[in-house]
Length: 69
Ligand SMILES: [Zn+2]
Image (tube, rainbow, N blue to C red; front, side):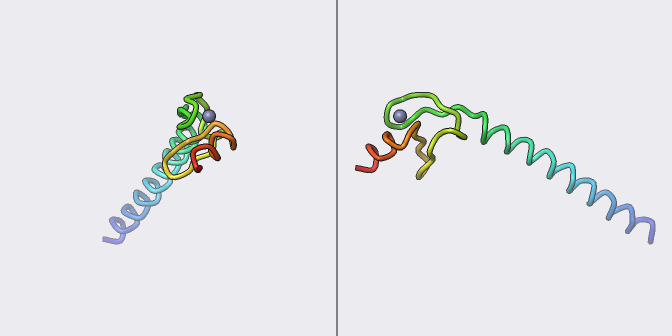
C-alpha cells in the first residue's frame, strides 16, 4: 500500500513537470513567433513586436491610435 502511494506521488510529480515543460515551450513559441496581421494596415508582424489590445494586434503605436479614434 505504501509503495502504491509513493508510486502515485512520483508519477504525479513527473507528469506535472513534463506537462509544465511542454506548456512553457509551447507558450513561448506561440507567443513570440506567431505572425499576426495588423488590424489597421494589414502588415504582418510577430506578436512580440506588435501591440495587442482587445484581441486586435497592431504593428505600431500609430496604427493602435488610429483604431482607437
Ligand atoms: Zn499597422
